[in-house]
Length: 440
Image 1 (cartoon, rainbow, N blue to C red):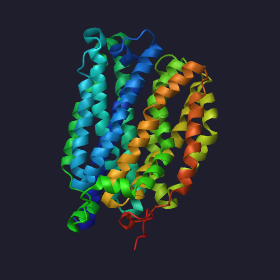
Image 2: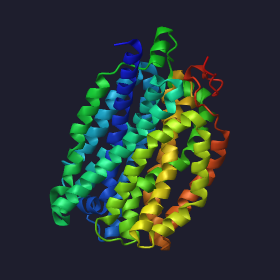
Image 3: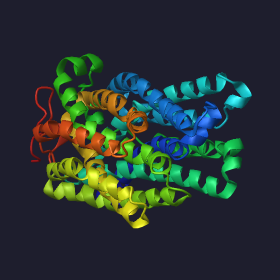
Image 4: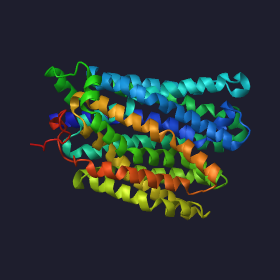
């Protein structure tokens, strides 16, 4: 095999192993997002379906409390001992905590112990996820050739969509095959238990990898930071604040579209049957088809045109899109969801290549993980709960649209200030500047 062929093989392995962790993380969200009422009834035994949904979304949000702590621990650790070792740890913790929920007793069996166990598992999941995305995106970016970083990075979010689709598909298949009563009795356990084998596959892939070329260069030159957390806090705080503001829109759009939408269609719009599930899954499949071509497009025309398009779209299109969803027509529902899905895909396809380029190699994992997870904890995990609560209290079915529009307005300035990094080397970034040097 030629050297070029060997490099291509290593790149494909790096991308696959990185994307697998995102797949497992979002498999968990797919499971929670597609049966919130069932899980609420199992673990909280609330009086009404709405209270059950709110209980499930509250548990989902609990995991995000732990994410920044995971970012502060795993991120700097990845800058000190290497990306690969930390990523092998996070994937087994994430999948293991999801698997464990499938073994827990219900509220009927164990009373208050049941929700406490779920909350503990979610905290472990959140803590480990705090080191996952930043490390996975860093790993791909540091392996990818500069001219293909957008395309290869978009496969990370392909893993996101695949995981969510898989979680949603498993829940839907179990619901259709077993029926509502059986799902409430014991069928809800099956989707969680599948996370165990998925985690073992991901761990196997990651243990077969070596660390990234850029990190190995740091080790060879003895430039690995002795105290990466201190360096991050003292030199990267402005860039971290920039990142937090920039991904507000991504986080809210991501969790409204993927985690909240099933509940919105069934509980708010009162759409009956399994049709809403199948429409959401169809739109996600469409997003999977276009995400890597959009990533490749960002390598040709730059990241910022796509980010501008997404931001402008989220300012002007959510109200028409959500009005279409509320007409009761399957075609209108599909078009409305597809509008939000396409705008989100513009963000998802570019994020994995944009964020690693904001920080120098010495502290890239830590700065990325800390900023990303602070923003995610504040805005992402809370979005389904807040939107559900606002819709319930106001009766306004367009609340999700307004929430998306507000997030887009917040993100406008950070996106404008973001430097264009398409095609530029990650090696040129230093602690004093976030503008990479052109490829020589």
